[in-house]
Image 1 (cartoon, one colour):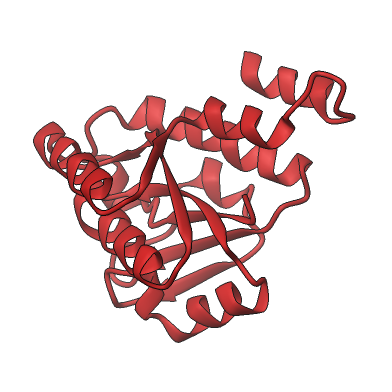
Image 2 (cartoon, one colour):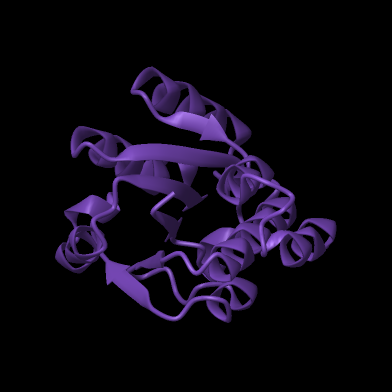
Length: 171
């Protein structure tokens, strides 16, 4: 993975998301792992929905504010993707059927390989999340989980990051 994209984990919205506690717990693990691997993390906030939840915000250096549902329609976000020469992303966030879905589809159309960690996305209604996953699959998005992505990057138990990653997984 070239980068982790963290979409709109905002307080006003998060409290209405089905299964948010587990989603946030898994998302924190993935963000911490990307930090250990020293891989870029690009985070966004949808304007008018308040601040990013504290436990995610404290792990992120910079958050890009956007008005478009797709992150790819935000100039600052797009410039960051180009600057980093991103070809493969792990994508997490809320809501699955709106901002995560539209971002994933626009990334695919731009030639970026997208893996969505389904245990790190959510919607207010389970049905909307389920439909989003199906639609993303149909459009060529790879479906994954936080641990799958972490171990895909880690590759081997001999990696120098292995012990540190195990501590995160156990949390």
